[in-house]
Structure formats: structure tokens, C-alpha cells
Amino acid sequence: MEVIEDILIDNLKIIQDDTLYRFTSDAVILSKFATFKKGDVVADFCSGSGIVGIHYYALNKNVKSVDLIEVQEELANLSKKSIELNGLGEKFFVLNMPIQQLGNEYNQKYSLILCNPPYKKCGSGETNLDKKIAICRHEVLITQEEIITIASKKLKYGGRLCMCQRVERLTEMISTLVKCGLEPSRLQFIVTKNNAKPYLFLIEAVKGVKPQLKVLENFVNGAK
Image 1 (tube, rainbow, N blue to C red):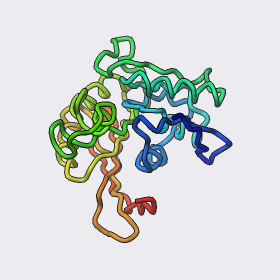
Image 2 (cartoon, rainbow, N blue to C red):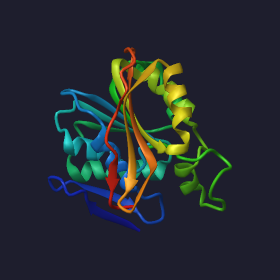
Image 3 (cartoon, rainbow, N blue to C red):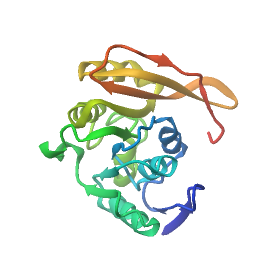
Image 4 (cartoon, one colour):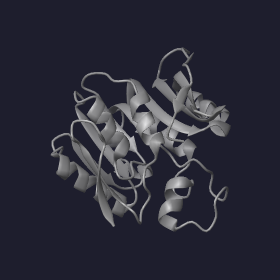
């Protein structure tokens, strides 16, 4: 069943469906972590129902445009409905397609790419999930390395990639980022109120710059 939820900024709404993947607090934290530059041309990879892109816009309305790229048709359609509901059709565009199929016309288009990716490698973790949910949680249709490789091609020089991921995949991600010409610039760990051990990290990497990594103070997520 579809439900309309308030994102608690300027009366903006997002539509979700109880039978599909529902976003978590991680998506909102990622949109807050991402840096902003006036006139940003933004892509939200693995956009689901559109929460990261829409919430980022809510915080930074001077973006030029936001492309929501989602492979699952039902989730992409929810994004379209949310865009229509909020009257955002002039800035938002939904691409219902695999990220791997983004054409050359998107090369060096974006100044910022956001991605809340599947956290688990295919075949690990939870089993017997509904396929629609599994695609969002596991690397069934795309891997972390593919996301980063494609993002590097689609970013402008000096463009930023912002992602979140489970802590156990940090070294893997940094290695892939550097290999693809994306230099980690900011790193932040997420902890819960009652547990100082990080369970997630946020990372921003910039295309074509010298090493400049800054480790930020831990973010405490009260929703976990």
C-alpha cells in the first residue's frame, strides 16, 4: 500500500510502498553529509523511491538538476509520483534503467553523485528475501566496484561522489576509489547512542585532486 510521508522540510513529501523497499535513516544522513555547491548537477545512483535526491534538494534548493537513477520500475514510479506531488518536475528527472547502461552523453555531466548502495555482496547475509528487497540490500544487479567505476566516468573534474557503506567494506571502497581516480576527501563514521563502535561510514571522494582526507567526528544516529 502506498503511503505519503512528510520529510519535515518545507512541507515536502515522499511516497513509499509497504510492499517495496523502504528507506532507512542512512539515506537521510547521507544527504546531510554531502557537500553543496551552488548550481550542482546531481545524480542519485540506486535511488529507490528517491529519498536521497529529494532530501538533498530540500536542504540545498539551488541545485541545477537532480537525476534519480533506479533499475526497479516500481520504485522509479514512486519517485515520479513524489516529484509530481511536490511540483519538482522542472529540476528532477527519473531514469528507470541500470546504472551500467548510462550512455556516453552522461560522461562528465555531474558535479555530485550520491549513492546509498546495496551493502552486502551477493550470496552473503540474509537469505530468502523477496527479490525486490534483495536487489536493494545485496549486490544482485550491481557491485560497489561498478558503481564507483561508472561514477568516475560520469563526474566532472572536481566532482564529488558521496556514499555510505558498512564499516567492514571501508578498505575495499577506498582502494577502488583511488584506482578509479577518485580521491577520498572526507570520512565520517556513524555510531549509535548506546554503542561507540561504528556500524556505518560516510565518504566523499573528489575526481582528479591530490590526497586530502579529513576524518570527521563520529555522527551519532539516534534512530538506530
